[in-house]
Image (cartoon, rainbow, N blue to C red; front, side):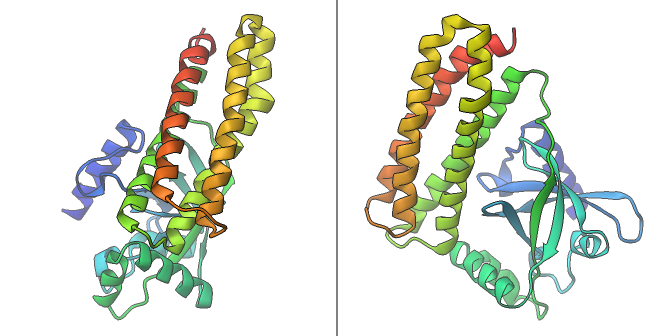
Length: 272
């Protein structure tokens, strides 16, 4: 039954670029493909994950089972794995966290979602925490550059919606993992805008001089969004400011308008 359920999730994930319903609806989810320690065959598992800057973290809960999940045993035998996040597919190197680092990360996870603690309470084994760090990038699985831009934008929209829900549920107390989720989002958005400013915009502007006004507007909006991201970073880092939910809502409103305008102006030309 579990295998059939996982296969349904995998198929839905791939068909909808990381969006799934049911039990995993609204959750951060990846597909992790490991090499079977005994069979040598690829084995794919849908897993919830925690953002952690340049890496992501997964926990071998197995629903509180007394046995470690197969994917964990596979990573012990071969730490190279493939990660699908709904936008990109990439090769990752797995590192099993130990000692104080493992305990601190797990405590962070439990603070954000008590369900992890409930899984731990069901078993005498220590639930393993594994860091997955990208070692080889891969392009989006798309048929055109325009589709690629939309897919990347949709990933940002989805993550910001998850953060918004987390902030709303957290109330006045901001947990450590939520802080990291916000900071990781800020880093990703800033990197995306640097790539556009330094690469895509100049290339398109050179080919299509009529884009001068649109590109100027998009660059100005990048500056404005960078200011909002800095404000968000300051709040979640405890450097001052209040009303985090209001700031997130303001960022969502301006970012949605920016992404929509950019798609309207650039996708027809990228797909031409």
